[in-house]
Image 1: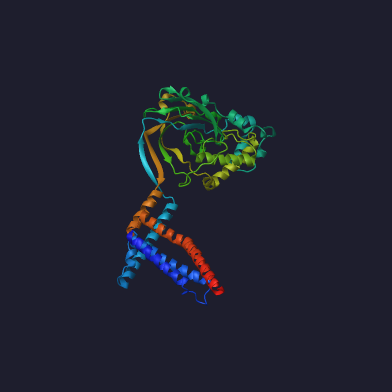
Image 2: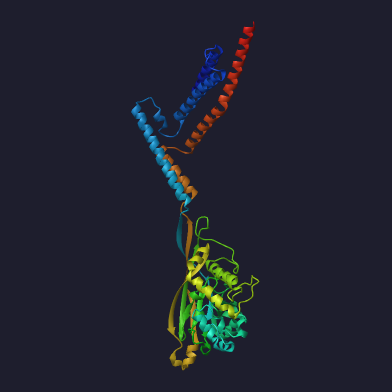
Length: 484
């Protein structure tokens, strides 16, 4: 403080000396105007004050190396210190840019954890007979040639329909041509209880077939590996057409996902299928930092990637074919149900969706929280030929058993690998390494800049006002003396 007060006193004395010289006319050169003298005097005073601020800064700053540059030592040593400070500052600047780029790319890491559960709800299980329409219904409406034409991939199959059949509802045809749940599923047991007593059975249409979904409400909860879902099916092989494969299609999917027939597990007749599954849980980062996303769907209440893909296909059918297909779960549009004649249009759009799946995938990002089921399948011959069962009866029968392989959940959690706190920590560490600086050093530099700006804005203005007042007084005295 004493040193600072001494410097201020010296500065005031020098400024008073300059003012005295102006008053005595030492700067009043005949070739200089009053404004030039004022600007010159104020500039000299400002430069002296500017040097005082800079000297105070480099002598007291906590940043290493700057004071060494201005020590009264050999010029070589000062230049060496100058080079070291510039090199360190350049290295620090490079590191700041590097860390800033890493922060802006939002890097992420995935943590894998295996959790043991005491019980797990079964996924939704959709059951379909691979026969889409019973042969008696096909014969009744004369659909043989029409279905054969669609199977061949023709774009114009409407000519194969009778005029009285073309405008029939396709949904009603599937309803009439499909089996009821009691006809199709002859036995459904979960543990020792009947499925119908434990959960609701939901009718749905998948891939042009009448199907049934079990456990859509999530009420079937397995608490031991022995607690399995036992199913027996009656295929009604006599009602199969010549172009259809025989068997049962079982789709294991999340309760939020619509069933997709292409992902079904097929069990042929005279076989028992053993389906075991494990569950994976994924928690992805939101769209700001990760790849997951969300969008409003037209036909499904909750967003999933599978629901989004199906939603796009259904909207395309409504827009291009002008009707609502049987697979649509909600009647949210004013479009009428598709007719039998519209099936050819639906088939073309479904074919296009399989030819260009990447376009649909880009429009449907994965959901942020999801459950996926990993399935394993094995088969055994059933029923036993020693049970005196005829060949037709054996071909009518299919059995299936579904259960959890284990009660462990593999959890995948995405998290940010580099956050703003890590960025600040890295910058602080490198500032200390390169220049020995800290937050205090930054504050010192800000105060130094603020002082300089204050002097530039206010000090010269005050100096000009003071000098102009003295010049006005001096001129007045000279004019009065000349008059006298």
